[in-house]
Structure formats: structure tokens, C-alpha cells
Length: 338
Image 1 (cartoon, rainbow, N blue to C red):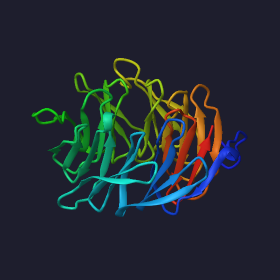
Image 2: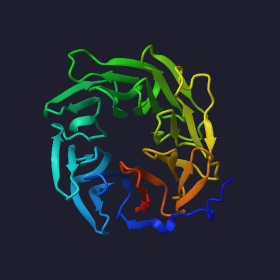
Image 3: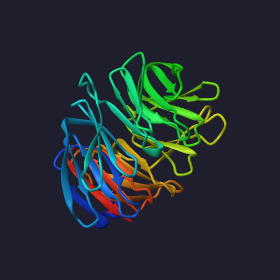
Image 4: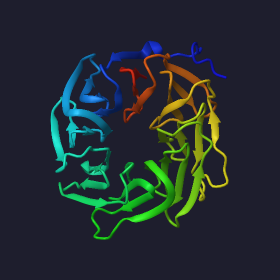
């Protein structure tokens, strides 16, 4: 077992602690590469912008709770229970992307290439294209998650009973990949060959998109709230267990008939993961507030943050992999500079 209270290798002295002032929903890096501002979406109303120069600024964005957030490199997109989709720029400028006509909660947001944004309200999913046009489709139940394909304008929509694949520029209905149960998150593999959903139960489900072949990934202690693809796209790192679980996706059949790699066993549950954008390293957040870096080659661990301050609720790297941002349910946050 790893000692989660006093590990030997530490980067804590290179980590800047931040009092976010509220639960952290998500974190992203926005602005020019190498000079990004860390943007922390908080549970209520505001986005906290933290600059490299030590400045911190709370920006009012929503008239209520923030339910989801995603960054596209230039801005942080957020959805709120005020029915609005908002964009926050590095300088604190906010722009309304959309407002739901019925003021329904914006449950999920996702970003694609060229400034494309997706969001959901109830059973409906929306996409605002690069040309500023808004397209919409409806699925059979409340949307659980959204993700853009790595190539082309294609959106995956998780919902009860499976996931739907939608081309917003086409006039056809979405294609449905079926599997019983409630699907509450979704991600494409970086090569676009596989689609994986997280479920309300402690499991993942996947499909090979070419033929709809099923793949079930189970054995977790709790619901999988966080997944992240490794830099080479060969494995999917997942939370939801007391070890870092990595499923293989480099073969033509993905994880079908394969066992996952299990790294960094601990006495606590992993609740958040974020793979480094270039190196074989994964940032891991625990339910006791601990943050580790795990080297995938040999499972070596380095502490970024000691336990405390609630469960880790957000983890993200900047594009260059030189900074890691994190936040907790208790309102603690921080930035690691490598």
C-alpha cells in the first residue's frame, strides 16, 4: 500500500495554494500558450481567474449554480441553473452564448474545434457551429453527458439506454448505440474508433463505432466520475477504485478480452484523473483531498497536495503540460508549476 499521509517524493513546495471560496466544479487553462490563466468554475455563480503573477479575481458569471464547464483554450464555457451558457475570457470578460427559452438547467457543456460549443437542457442537446448557427436534437431521456468526436462535427450524447451519435449539419436523426442503464458521461477515443460511457452503476460501457461491438468494463468500488486518455491514446485512465485503472485500447478490439493495468494502490478512493498531454504521467485526485502524479511506466508516485479540504473535484493540465490545476469540494484549490 502507498502511504497517503507522508510520501517520500513531493512537489508540494512547487504548488501554490488557493482559497477558491467555494466548491470547485471544474478547472481549465485559458489564454495564449505558455501564458495561460487558470480558470476555476465554482459551484455558485462565479469563475475564479488565477494568474501566474499571483493575482486572483472572482468574476460573476451566472445567477445561480454552475453545473458544468469545459475549456477550449481561449475561454471557459459554463452552464448554469439560470438557463444560460456563458464564456469567460482570461481578462474576465463574459459573453452569453445562449439562454434557454424555458430557463431550464444547462446540465452539460462540451467544446469542439473552431469555437464549436455544445450544451444540454433536459432531453435536448444543442450545438452552436463555427458560423454561429444553433442546431438541436432530442433524445429519449435527460442528457447525461456530451463529447465531440476528435475529427469532424459529430457529437456523442449519453442518456438512459445508451448513447446517440449526432451529426448537427445533417438532416438525419442521431444513430443510437444501445445498452440498458443510465449513462452519465461519454468520451471518444483519440483515434475516434471507440466510444465509452460512464454509468450510474460502478461500471463503464463501450462500443466499437465501426460495428457497434459492445465492451463492458466493471469491477469498480463506486461510480466512475472521471476518465482521461493517455497522451499516446493507447489507454483510458479511470477513477472509481482504490487503484488507478487503465484500460487498453490500442488493439482492434480495445479492452475486449483484456485486463486493465492497476497502478498506485492506496487506502483511499480515486475520484479524479487527468493524463499529462505529452508524457506517460497521470494526475490522480482522491476522496481525502490528496493529489498525486503517477508515472505510468513504473507506478512511481509524487505528491502534489497533501490530504484535507474535501474530495478532489477538478483536475486539468495546461496544453504544454507545464502546469496542473486542481480543486476540491471543500473550496481548496491550487496550481502546480513544473
